[in-house]
Length: 317
Image 1 (cartoon, rainbow, N blue to C red):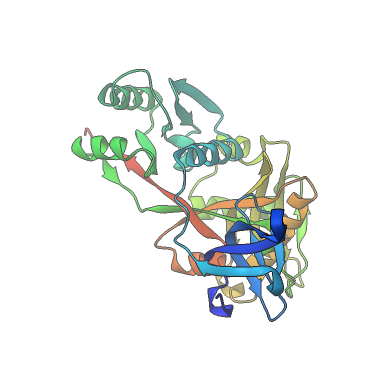
Image 2 (cartoon, rainbow, N blue to C red):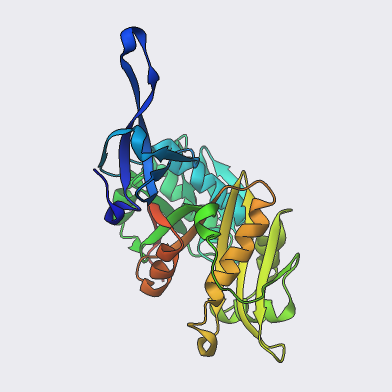
């Protein structure tokens, strides 16, 4: 039987749902994440995000099971949503690969995204990407979702492309994020303030004209801010809603204000706004080596859906 230590794990619960012919009990299996458990009931969040409360008296058996394997179709769908939530001003296609450019501002907006068939052999597709970016004065980059496109990663490695740090694509339900907690007042703006852009420019080391398109081109986007008593901007984050998902990014707390719950407050404010627009789930991208960020998101229920790695072409100089 399950116990409190199993909360957060994937489980299967066999439960009674009625009586069948000849008085035999009818049972059905419920699969999902164990959310809570006590003496009276347990709550399981199904793969569709819906939470099911099951009285203890209705439980015939229950146990932990291995995490569900992520389907490749789900990786493709989530990568498409993330791409739309961070829109590059130049966005072209090579078959089912995306070619994206934004004056070099951020890896994601300036790298090819191989999702399906490029219409040519992989080696030829890589060469086409290299030519496309070089023609725009940009370092050729290809962002490879894993394990979806291990074949592309292997081909890039064989050609001497350099792998950048591994990035985790993490997801959770908004109900996880919106668990009541003491959070600071957060201002949600429809456009980034001057102070917001200054923090972004310092973090990304530049802020070209294309950056404003990436940040603001979506209709459903908000810029969250926490300010101090004298109006100084202490923390920022950006949220965008795409197809029922909140895409969370640019979470930044100035060094002197860290450890006060500002990042969680920003995330909760954006989650509340997104829920009001029909979103039910959230996603974000965080470098695996960012241990502080990974730990924070874990507290809010984020788990890794899949990973990606951006490869950079070797210098020809």
